[in-house]
Image 1 (cartoon, rainbow, N blue to C red):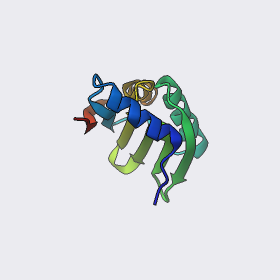
Image 2 (cartoon, rainbow, N blue to C red; image 1 turned 30 degrees about the vertical axis):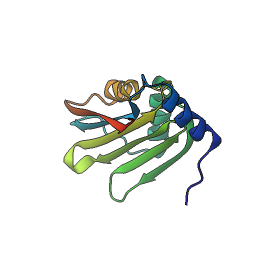
Image 3 (spheres, one colour; image 1 turned 90 degrees about the vertical axis):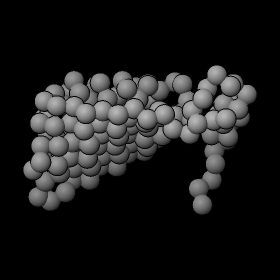
Image 4 (tube, rainbow, N blue to C red; image 1 turned 90 degrees about the horizontal axis):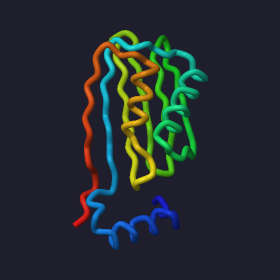
Length: 134
């Protein structure tokens, strides 16, 4: 069982008081095709940290895993939720996932930063509002 933090409980109480907020968070999922591939763990770590900064997120922990013979996955757990990236070099494909709650972090800014740095030839993106309140 995962313990609720004092911060998360206070945030939910604020949401209930402030009826102008209708959702717990915003989730962006993006498909990048024919982008610059990263195979170095340190480079991916730096890229994800900078994407979190661009979104004004609060990083808590990160994990990077390089697959053999190719591909890499990186995840940053945020105080606001998470940012993840998964690469398939053999398919020229990158999956990006950014979910944030509250109103301080902007997940779309992280996606825009990653688009700028990875220069995908084609992008498919979906915005999902999650956790409707009421």
